[in-house]
Image (cartoon, rainbow, N blue to C red; front, side):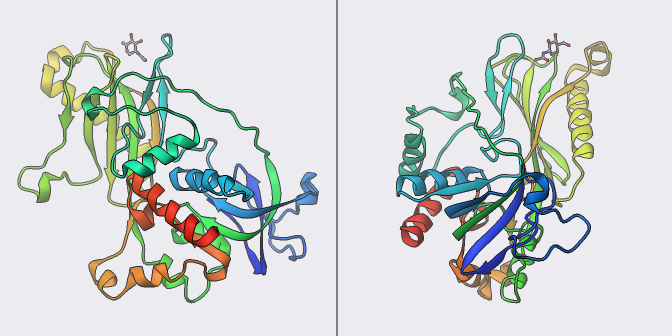
Amino acid sequence: MHLSKMVSSGVASLAFALPMLGFAQASASNACSGSSCVSPRDLGWNTVVQKDVIIMGGGASGLYAALRLREMGKSVVVVEERENFGGHTSTYTVPGTGAPINFGVQVFGGDETAIRRFFGFYNIPLIQVQPSMAPQSNTRHVDFKTPTGLQTIKASKLLISAPPTLENMAPLLLDSREIPLFSSFKSQGYFVGMVNVTGFAPGDEFYNMAPGATYSLPQLPALYQISPTSVAGIYQVNYGAQEDYYPEMLVKADIIATVERVRRSVLGATVAQHLPPVKLLAFSSHTPFSLRVSAGEISSGFYTKLDGLQGYRSTWYTGAAFSGHHASHVWKFTEDIVNRRFA
Ligand SMILES: *[C@@H]1O[C@H](CO)[C@@H](O)[C@H](O)[C@H]1NC(C)=O
């Protein structure tokens, strides 16, 4: 998420490029400085959208907040830098049959009330399953007409639902109270994908374990797991990197190389060499994943100070950095914030 600036003088005023790939300029009254600065009028936008709440990030927490706030009669705008809403959810559609396979998020567990409330917004019925027995379901994509180009949005409240990394937060012109907190976060690389590989037996599943290491976790960067899906020959993979800046090109290459290596060791080199090469069918990044701080920072009150930022400069926060990565916990936390601070 790359906002350029935020002017907070009673109202928050933001201008974005949507999808947010480019540079954006703050309110019309704000002088334009810097070569990449463009005013909304230059791009043919001269309307200013006025909303109660701007939500920065269209993942699990941002969408929950948007639907809940709308239910409460508030007007909202959700700003998302990716092409699609839905955060870590990803679906691969098998060519030919059109069968959908979810590979970003497969099951929702944890807080049942929060799960029921979220899917209730969409009138989606729920069934209880064992993770390994998840039945094939229908996936429907909904197209929203969204503007492209630069847009100025004014709102009295800002809800940050994107990961509050220094990079994501910098455009909001952080102050001396906010900078030390947001710069403390460390995060890691986490990636998911779908691969086409022939030769494994039905039901084969592979975990990368390092015997002797803490929790038998492999040294990162590494592939964590190769798991079968409902379609033969298509496997889901997860990949981790210690640093959140690990290049996606290297991740993709290492996924293919690792799956090839596993196949060679399972089938033997002679058999494996005659099989079609492993192909990466789909890929998605969940980076920056697992924002966290050191134990020392926690014991010296990091989360108390972080929580103290709720409402500071008319800005509130939700998302995995505040609640953990379980969608239901994210929704429960968001419900609490929205209920207590936006009602
Ligand atoms: C997977 O690979 C096999 C063998 O190359 C091919 O026949 C099949 O169509 C591929 N499936 C997908 C979904 O790409």
